[in-house]
Length: 425
Ligand SMILES: Cc1cc2nc3c(=O)[nH]c(=O)nc-3n(C[C@H](O)[C@H](O)[C@H](O)COP(=O)(O)OP(=O)(O)OC[C@H]3O[C@@H](n4cnc5c(N)ncnc54)[C@H](O)[C@@H]3O)c2cc1C
Image (cartoon, rainbow, N blue to C red; front, side, top):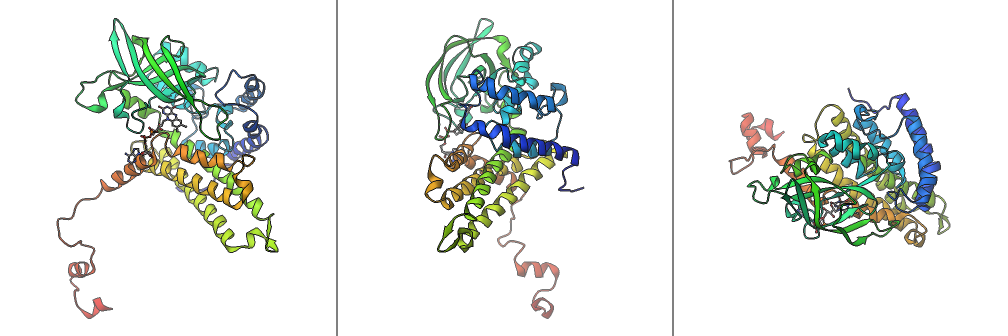
């Protein structure tokens, strides 16, 4: 069975989401600071009522399984939803699906004790609190084997020392999920890290600096020093040495949702550019009549449609029962392409808008910066390309012959037809 149709009942929900995002959520992008700044008066006044409407409609935190209060939507539906949510940086938080809280809640739901779930998971799912995921360190970003922050056992608890940076939303977070080294002597380097949950109010967590990138509403990526931070034994999430396995729990569907949100950003850029090129005049005619303009518009649309199909196919495969491990190649490919699509389409939008496109009055440079951001965060492009190639090549066996079997003379030889008139024809 293979179909590109959306069932009419779900299409009605998508239409509602689309109108709701455009009318009520997108304007927030220009008004409010960080979307994780949930104690800000503006957030309470403007975002909370929208979240209430989403809950009432039954569309809150749809990524969750029914046991956690979600709809249990499959990946395809979630992808289509995220295509709408991605139009606004507030889309995810208004619908209860913002990173890193989504991934952190997956970890907690999977590995948390009943007590941890009660204390952290419940309020997190309700967006009464937000959380931080602290993995990256100044000396080792893309390679988590370089993590040096240590947790050492002390009495019946642990003491954490080290530095993390690009800990997004640390200043708003009620708790951290942090990856640290607990088993430095383990033979398998992938068994040296463990994951902990840490109350953000624990003494010893020191902010050194905060980073923002161009286009962000406020600085929200923290460089944090962990000075003798004491964590009770119950703070361990999963077993000792399980850090990498726990980290993998959070990456599955999230990347597809990011991809559809990147698609939404790029689609917005194309929409605005189409409006501009049918409006703007040059050389006595509208801009779109120039063939080189047509080429750029056509290329952008084609790129978007190809990418959309790729993400939806991966989501569909996930719904058919392929687990995330089996889909590694597909998911990594999606991660690679989303960066390029957003980069190319936002760059086109800047260029075809002329001087106006470059200004801070237009949104395109923000989208362009986002394209660089998504090419680094959650695994850089090069690493994902390498995954695609390795996965692809593992199904091929080396040919011991000097000349490959697919050469014409060898094919003919095998067919017993070499040099005959039949072959020449
Ligand atoms: C906006 C933003 C938010 C983030 N939020 C978080 C967060 O909440 N929690 C968290 O833990 N981390 C977070 N990160 C960190 C992110 O995971 C790292 O930026 C990422 O892992 C890359 O590490 P790095 O920046 O140190 O780059 P480096 O590892 O220093 O990489 C430098 C360059 O080398 C390339 N490169 C790296 N590895 C390879 C390779 N194997 N082959 C070829 N080229 C390679 C990279 O693409 C890059 O171009 C965030 C990053 C950004 C930009």
